Structure formats: C-alpha cells, structure tokens
Length: 401
Image 1 (cartoon, one colour):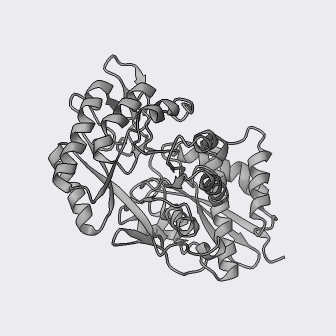
Image 2: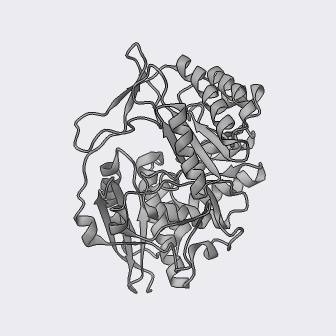
Image 3: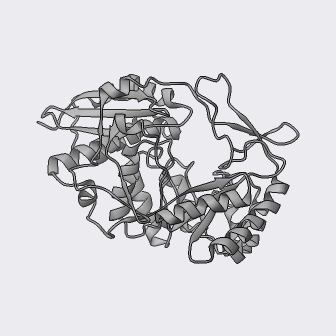
C-alpha cells in the first residue's frame, strides 16, 4: 500500500517568529506539510506530536483522513483543547496536502472546486493617534485592500492591543504586561471611527477588534455606538465562554459580529451559529483540528447565513494561510480572510503560500497546498522562547487578553 505513512517529522523553527511544522511521508515518497503553531505554547504542541501522535501514525493509511482525524481526536480520551487540536491540525493539513498531490490537483479542487476567483482579504492598520491609524489605513487602501481592521492606542493605557507591543522580545523570561481600562476605551473607539469615516469615506470596509475585553453590556454599548459608522463587523467582543451573553449585544445593536479565533472545535461554535448571534465565524484552522473540522464548521454556518472569516495572523505559517485560501475558494458562505504578511525570513523556510492581488488572495494550481518546507533553512532559525502579553487593570488585577 503506497499510501502507508512511514515517517513523521516535527520541525520547530523561528524565522522571525516561532512555527511548529510537520512533514508526513508515505511509502511511495509522496509527502505533505502541515502547521501546528500555537503562539506562546509552541513546544507543548511539538511534544504532543513527537511523543504521542507520531508513533500512532506510522503504518496508517494517509488516504483515510476522516478516520485518522476521529482516531486522534477521540483516542486521547481527554480530547480537544488548543494544544491537542493544534497538533491534530498539523496532521490533518499534511494529509490533505498528500491527497492533493496524489490526485495531482490543487486542494481547492479536491474540496469541490472554486466558487470565486479570489478570497477577499483584510489586514491591520494601527497607530498611536487617530491620524496615524488613518494614514496607515490609507496606505493599505492604496495597495488595493478593500477591507481594513483599525486599532489605535487608548489614552492612559500601556501596550494597547493591536496598536502597541503585542509580545515580549524573544528570550525575555516573563510576558510583557499591558495596562488597560474599559472606560477610556469605550470613549475612544467610536471617536476613532468617526474620524476614519470623515477621512476615508464610506466606500472602504472598516472594522475593529475588541479582543474579548468587554463585559456583555459594555460590548452592547460599543456595538450600538459604532452603528453610524457601518462596520464590516465587530470582532471578538466577548470572552469565548460567554455564549449566552451575545444575545445582549443582538438585543441592542445591528452591528455585525465576528467571533471564534479562540474556539477549538465545532461544538463551541454551534450555539452562536444556531441562534444567529454572530455574522462571521473566525476559527483558526491551525487550532480547531485543521481542514477537516473547518469544513464542517463552514457547512453548519451556511445553514444559518453565517459567513467564514478564518483567523489569519502572522503567528500561523504560510502553510495554514494557504489552507485558509484553498478552503475560502471552495466555500459558498465565505466572507473575508484575515491576512498579515510574514517577515522575509519566513520565505527562506516555507515556500509557497497565498498571493495578494488587488484586495484578493489567490493560490497556485500546484498539487496539494502548494507549500514546502526547507529543512536545512529551518535549522538556521532555532526556536526562541517568547510569550504573548498579559493584561492587567489599573488596580493590578489580571484581565482578559
């Protein structure tokens, strides 16, 4: 059986930032690549892959993707969570890559074929002032972006999310600590979008990321205050545990809501989708178990007119970015794709990935994902410990990230 798995190799590398990559090789020599990067906890995923999952894969049929997914997800008994599902995503993506290569077809074709010529995408504009955020947004618009996420520093805070320091320098022993308060934030953001609309007009799609920091009534207030500025969506207004609290936002505002980058499986998404409490589902393919799980989330979402907006930050590798776009192209209820360009060093280690053209992302017609890993180059960029920041209120208490 030439699809029998004979080798599983985990690669931890840091070409500008840390990635956990996977290469699965079959008896015929066909191999696939995957991404299990979990920002700030990379080595936990690498250990799960090396010590627990890789031994289970040797001798299995690479063609049986669904069976392997269920086998690995259920087999740990204490299943799910970001570490195990990131490891599972690396395996799943690599197996889909193998399937595409064996069929000599790009992955989007295996998934059902294109439903669009490209994936509408957005990137991040930020600044220490309203003017700086506006100038940076304008630069992206001039490049062809049609959707832009906008953040700004909040007066009286330290390290505002999306506009200040977002992680500690490599090698530092403790996470960077932000200082944040909701009152100045709630006063500032509506004024930011009033300024942006006056400067940029109504044709460009704009939105904002709360990053799960508000209480339900605060989030409802912000969503209502932002209604005059017609946001594309308001991202992650509440903690992921607060399913029922999204009803409060819906009761008070028509601002569209995007949510889901901290979800790790379809069951966490289901209540928000079924009750139409969100408009965009934003799971991360690298954290929910890969393409297999994301396809199911997209299919359920279609029934409730919820669109996909898969997480696409720089802390996942071009392999997952490519998987995002392949799935975007084949998904009828696709909405928008987050995309942030990587440091140039990344292209030395990982070849391939999406291409940006006039506001849209495309992928090549190469078989599978169209990505590869240069193992020698990866060895030149060893892992460097780094943490995501923590957030504290003015009184010193720990707050949501």
